[in-house]
Image: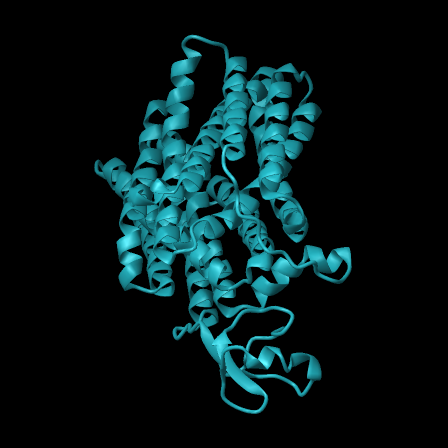
Length: 446
């Protein structure tokens, strides 16, 4: 898997991703402490609102940026977003009012919503080989999982020698190093085509392509399944460990680590698996594992007993396995489903729509956990995961071919396009099919 790091451009981008993620993790810990410092017992409410603002920024900003990302130099754009995030991190220690936190969080997350899908859409151009790109996706998943494990431990170590305000300095350094690494390489610029139409049409082009592509509609349903399962982990781990099991707060990281280790294990194994299995079957298997894990969690929460703690850890490990198997390969169907010029918009659509799923499941997991108990919450979220799996199964064709035969109307403007691919009729041919200006609709017989 590490062979892909021989590519200098990708190596620098991967290091930039890791450093920025660690900086973001430090900021998350520091933000919680800052909220408590300002709001006291109401810190939970402040952080909940900040999380909602983050999701609104992700859902609303990403499609707008995706519409115009191709018109800007990639390297300059990514560096600018890193510098904006560094500037916000510099400002956070000086806030004294809650509303100031909300404004800065919106700016910070808006910059992240602009940076992340543009960064993700750049990697297929840096690594055009499918095997290399798959390895890059697995390394990216490992980076996210390692951040969730390393950042809290690093923050705890730093807090023994500095105040929590110093953690924001670590965030600033992270974003500045990320910007420097991006500056150090030349990024391939997509051969963008200036699209006609209104600002509205350009903004929603990526979402339109996404929702008209069957495999991507299936991917959206799998995003819902993954959001339901991961929301149970993210929102209710501390409630289950301390509230239901009455274990000390120091055991919460062990539970989160069980989920992270499961995710990392699959990320290491996926490149070989995807050489033998198609994306669809691997991702469906992952969603099935998550559903089974949630149902097992319902049984564990209902039965209790002296083995509840190890069974709970095993459940979180299993959900982590399924989560990584579902989401890690998602860049592959996105890459297959868009022309290079449309790729930033389609990756932005994935970023926006997937976070819309979390915007639904985060409060659902929290409210259900507080109102109906852990066992019933496991059951409801398992049902949501199964619904996502069933929709994905129906929306994403099992025979998901790249090349499709299709017919075009008798229009002179399409004559040149008909010479592409394999001609099979006067107005029909076969080639790798994607939704674009020539193909506004998926063939009905596929």
